[in-house]
Structures are given as C-alpha cells and as structure tokens.
Length: 141
Image (cartoon, rainbow, N blue to C red; front, side, top):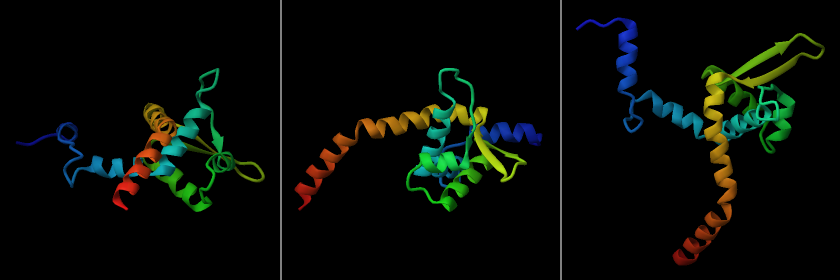
C-alpha cells in the first residue's frame, strides 16, 4: 500500500517504542538524560517562571555561572544540541561584543516542567539515596 509522506510520519509516530533498539525516541531519551541538558532546561525554565511568568532569555555567561562546573565547550555543545532538537532558541544581537542569549521554545517549555521536577526530586531525596548507598556498601564490604 502506498502512503503519503504525512501518512508515513503518522504511522512511524504510532510505532515509536523506546524499548526497541532502533527507535529514534531512544536517542532522544539518551540526550535528555544528560545531566547538563537537565540542568540547562531547569535553569532556562527558572528564568521564565518568575512572577510575570513570561519567557526570559539568559545569556551564555548567565547560564555558565548558574551551572557550576560546566565547561564552556560542554555548555556550547549542550545548547547546540538543544537548539537542534527545537527545545531552545538562540538569539544573536549585533553589539560589541556580540550578545548571544538562549530561551526555551514552546516545545522546551513543555519539557522543562518534567526536567525541573526531576532536578527537585534528586535534591529532595539525596539524603535517602546516600543512606541507601551507604547501607549497600556496608553490606557488600
């Protein structure tokens, strides 16, 4: 049976299953599980969750300061991958020096709530995880 391109996309989307090795959603899950992706999305989400609840962009230097320990190279790679995936938009303003800012797209906003919740869960449950690790290590010693 011959399908149009639109029908093929709908059919493929219905068949996405991250448990299958060849599924493209598995690659996306791999990207999203990166700690820097999680933290960038959470930081940009925090920037647009203020009292006015409007999206606000962040400059590269702001993100770099917010994400302690991230190298310039890693932050650049992370932002480029998020831009490629349509989660972040990059705006360049011709100033001296050039001003570059980043902002969540609508698609990014739809994901950042989940990422912020994941970050919060890790912070809220770190004591429990540490205790479990210590208990496990003591039993295995």
